[in-house]
Length: 253
Image (cartoon, rainbow, N blue to C red; front, side, top):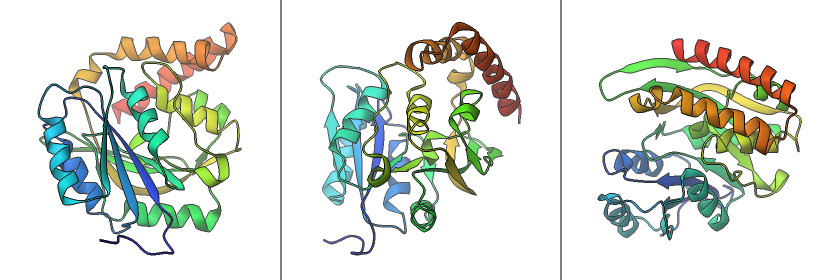
């Protein structure tokens, strides 16, 4: 069966998975429901011990656009994403975690926006939610730069798309957490700005457990500044404090 048209560039959708049996079917369904149909969904499983792989294989039998790789050992979301990026054949690289959701017209609107404006990296707004209710809507700024992003990550990973024809294939840095921000920073060393399509086109599932790991997140944020970006100590302190302040404001809304 042929999906998409000759005028639609291929989009490679990067999805890491680990013990995601509760939500991954919803995430896959939101991809398969896209009005933009020329895509490949590249899932990399990080050695799940539940029914995640069985669920994915069920979708593979239904739709040839779904593809699965399994890591030889548990290595983290960054390694899983990089495995999918390595397999990607598409011009555009998009990201969706296995518990988040896309609006049906997300790719159609975002790819059209990027092509029309020659955008290398784009992002959109998104709705926060949990199992019981909708939470706040995050509408990002019109654009961000390398310096701005150091002070706060305004690019939701579930909304990001980059154009490999402009910047080549980009991979996530080898750090256990904050890899997505590391990738955006690396891209913004190559192009001056990333631009937003300020519409709510995705749904981010709030993980209650993540809130209890604030100190763990801050630890990895510090390591991102010092070990990945190699910032001097005083610059790291400045950006770290601004990041913490912006994060507090963001998650209170």
